[in-house]
Every structure is written in C-alpha cells, then in structure tokens.
Image (cartoon, rainbow, N blue to C red; front, top):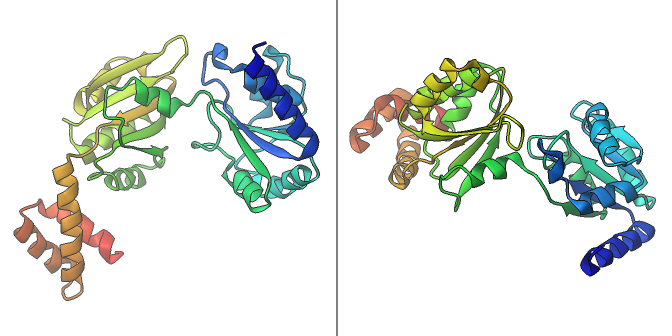
Length: 295
C-alpha cells in the first residue's frame, strides 16, 4: 500500500474511533472494476451501510468481501429511518450511504439524511467515484463549461412536456436520465418541445457490455431508436445542447415585458401585444404568459 493510502486509512480509522461520520460513497454504475480502493476500505470499516436496495448491494458487497451490516434506506422509509441513523451517528458510529449504482443523491435517496447530518453537526465525507451524468457528459462532445442536471422527467406525457418546456430557453447543456420504459416517448416529447434539429447525445448502459454513445439531432435519434429495439433497452443519459445565448437573452427580455403588460392586461391581450413587440412566436409567448400569471 502506498504511503498516502496508509495515512488516509489511519486517519479514517481515527475518525471512526473519535466521532461518528456519514460517508457518502459512490459505487460502480456497471463495471465492478470502477470501485475504488478507498471506497472498499471504508465500507469494510464502517459500522453500518445504508443501502437503497440491500438485495442489490449485497451482490456487490459479496464480490469485494465486505461483510458490514446493511440497512435499507430508500424513498419509502427515509423519513422514518433518518432520525434513527442520526442517533447512531451522534453515538459515535460511522455509517456509509450508498445507492444502487453511482453517486448517491443524484436522482437517488439520501438528501434527507445528509441534510439532517449537517443540522446535527455530524461530519459528512464524500468518497467520489462513478456518476452516470458526469461520465456521459464527458464523452458527449457538447459544451461542458456550463451544464444543468435535470434528472428524470415525469412519467406522464403532459407533465413531461411541461417539464421539458421549463428548459426551452436554457443556454446551459442539459443532462437528463431516462428509463427503457419511456425512452421513445420521452425523446418524442423532446422533439415536440425543442425541435427536431436540436443536437443530442444518448449514452446507454455506460461502462456495461452494450455501452452505446450516439450523437445525433433529436429527430434522427427518434428514428434511430425506433429502428432498433435493442437500443431501447437499458439505462439512459440524454445530453442536450443548450439554447443559443441570444434566444436565452430574448426569453429574459420577454419575461420582463410580459410582467409589465400582465399588470395591466389579461393574459391573452398581454401575450398578443408582447408577440407583436418582440416578433417571437405567439404560442411561445402565450405559454410564458400563462406561467408568469400562474394560470
């Protein structure tokens, strides 16, 4: 073991003896070889592992010879489980938080526990590793100087389209997750909202056997998916290019104008007048007017 690794191990052992620490640990998103040595070491040393799905995580723990007790911690029990875990941390125990795959809290449970730990002055320490969003972004070929992680869109079409419309004028690169059950419907909705010519990168099954990274325009991506059912399987990250800066600026100016007009006029009249002044499409202006008016 390298000297720095030895020092890290000793330091973490000392922390374990002196105070309770909540470790937020990233696990592989597919390839088990992506599991870091430090993550394995800490998972062996902590008193408890809070796992999103203990049945799923048990396989990974057995693979690395980790026999630490596990407790389920997921969306359905985190409200009840959080206070008990905080009590154990305050009593001096060390706990590791892991999700089924990747970095916890990114579209996974854990926010409530980490927030409660900070409020209770419990030390929270990250052990970084795999993250599907960052891995996909790094190979997308799209701008990475500014990006926004938006997670999973809603399941139902109407809510999903409204969700996408929130980002219509966003100039940062957008990162979405999607499942195999809704990938076709979701990409179709993206075409409806963002247009068929918008550049997108689909990353499927990252680090796994059938890893795919496909760059295309949205309209072409939809056809590509429809033509090959095998490409509709697995877990997906969609990286979408942001709106042109000019469009984003126009949206900000339009919002300011509409707010003034809506103070004096009904939604329909305000949107019609704003469309004439700016030259923007009436339906886009009307949608924004509805959002600003809360209707």
